[in-house]
Image 1 (cartoon, rainbow, N blue to C red):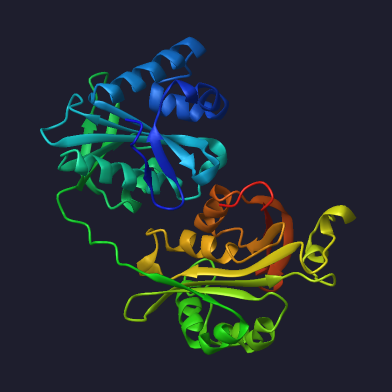
Image 2: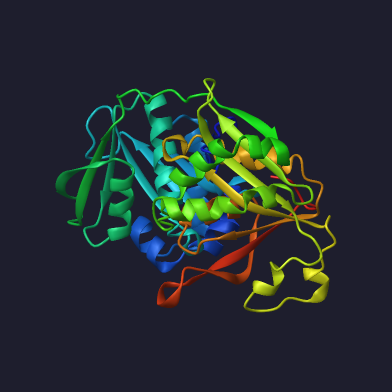
Length: 364
């Protein structure tokens, strides 16, 4: 069981066990306890359940309970359980139950966890996944739909609890992952690849919450030549074997006169904001085209770019409603410093959040 490790580049699923007692007790709230367990449990009861989870893994039993880990940090963000042969299931079906702790909700991690767990279940021979959620549990029902499940009608548990039932066919073969290569680019190289970078940028930011138009893309790249000429500019570009651009990232070292710290709503101490052209790397953009998301491309780009950086830390701005991006950055070790520069105009203007990754602690 110790070799069971599922990941999509943003989250990691590993077997739930006794070592997860403290983080689970710290993370569980009343809503999660009620939905998954019928109410809050005692410390002794939770410990016994986690031992049972471990025993089920060791015996290849009907229950396979995963801890949802936030990437390399290993932070327990919630759980997802598979039950093979549970009451009310037909042969070949597996029941999927999931829950996130409050601070991780709304970031797309539940959907990712369900998809990873279903992939595992299919490998174990399951042919159909089943999600049962109470009709008033809108968040759980939304996860089922986002994961591709279809409504299969209401059902009632032996205790009389009503559920909405959703199912997903696990027999369909998922398309194979397509290979990509990641190129390292300096300033001149990035200028030569500008059309490819624009292609990725335009598609990646066309949808919500950005809704960037062709005019917005032109404006963003109007100053690209000057940006590529900045100190220690670095870029990475992911392409298919036939040269199609699918993802990119770029940034540069922050000089002493940078405005990044000036844009914070709440000032930070001088010792924190001090820049000298070597201390911080500003990650300007990281984007992957939609058809290539969920395959670890963003993580590869991030790793490749930071592999060329010799700074102490990385700074970036993230849109407050870009939930998956925020979840990825948190999973990679970034922390939020505070609200900073504005995006948009007038009443629709929103503040981006400045995030920081300490490279002296660990490189993701």
